[in-house]
Length: 247
Image (cartoon, rainbow, N blue to C red):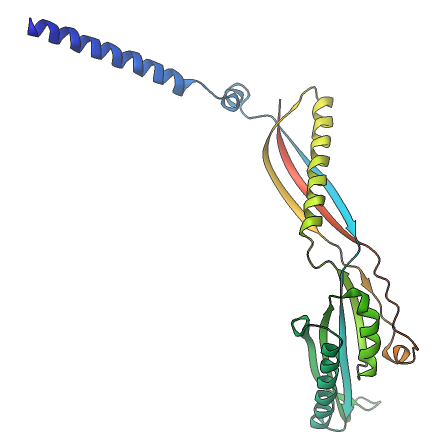
């Protein structure tokens, strides 16, 4: 009796295991939509597009190169004169409300000067330049005027920017993604298909520089009021490349 029941139970367990294995095998063997497409056509049909977007805003900071050029009979004399004037200049820039962290040396050089025939050294020239970021952009004109009065005789290369562009970048990115989808849907429709899921996406974000040529230091020194500064408008652009499944 016990042997008989044992045989029946064993047979039942074997049958159950076989049914379970068959069911599991069916699940594992069932292809996904993408796998089915790969099995039928070799690869998933794709459509890749590039979308662009941009947003504009007034810049809120300006960066300019400000320096002192000194000349003397000896390198030491030129350096001493330049150091004295540069220290006074930097002190004045800070007095005008520019943070010390926004002032950075961008150039320094000591070079001989020569006679007209280029054979005889007639003296030495020292150049020291700092890159200054003016974050209170409405004071840029006054700062530029005051630094000349403080001894700067080299002012050039002003450019404008936005201190925290993250929100603008996000807006430009959203516009680029929307543009990419519109392009993809138009292309898919023309090809007799529809746009499916996103398979890959990448982006590029940039803000083209907007330089402005400054007037010469001598001309600026003769001005009766603060230097006029036109900030214009800054453009933040984004570009995305998206690959969609083509259904």
